[in-house]
Image 1 (cartoon, helix red, strand yellow):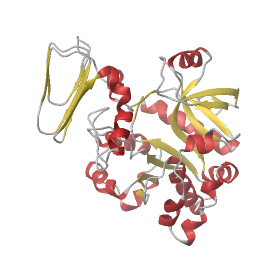
Image 2 (spheres, helix red, strand yellow; image 1 turned 180 degrees about the vertical axis):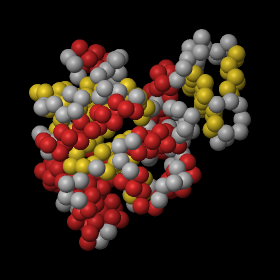
Image 3 (cartoon, one colour; image 1 turned 90 degrees about the vertical axis):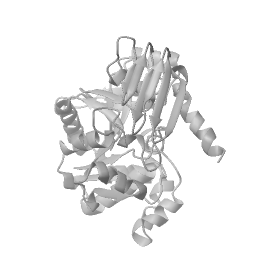
Length: 341
């Protein structure tokens, strides 16, 4: 079994930059998110069987917080083309090393506990993946109405493996509106964590069946090198390219608590609130502030006086202030900013 720690390239402006994404920030515990991810990966396999999928620009920043990593722990993608191409590339490399290799793909921006139950859930998923030749996702039973996550419609229950329940997947559903999400919860749908487990060979088979735009280019890796593959492969995500198309998909229900640090709003769920409903991390002083989220790192200080329902972030000389109600629109802002360059 090989652990692949991916999800390194996402943006969390202004605290993250291409060289310092949110996975290097201390948004979960006192350690950067990538350190927490490596700790849970190390509970599954030895360090020499962990691979971090990231761009070359992130090798040194990651090494700065994980100095014991070796060069072989990094599989450097020449350019970011989405999760489908990079996982296809990783599967092809693994299958050459071991035709029976099982991949576990972890995001580096998740919070989960307890570690023991995470390990048990993944062990159950690995057993199902080996036994039934399925592409598996880890699903979480919702504890609220959530429009920011994909949802999984479960089908027939599979033969037991370990302590976790597993099912065939009827369908994946993308991020719904609030009314639809409420219906999904009522019908027993699971959240899709994006943690995937499968045999490398099974993923390659399903790519050849459902994503030939990727699989047809995989021979370039051996013939011309990874650069040629990444130069020509279309941008795509694994959920749409394979998981929504394949009929060999299952889900293992997590027994652990999980959250995706995909927005600043997530900190209100994962951090301790003060008596006035504020979250503060770093050098922050709150005077009569209510319902606000403040994150500070590096030189400087944030002072909020009488403020209500704000998100204030200060990192490396950049400060962002926005109404908390508009935090979900951050990606739209980023897209507009990049389009204006």
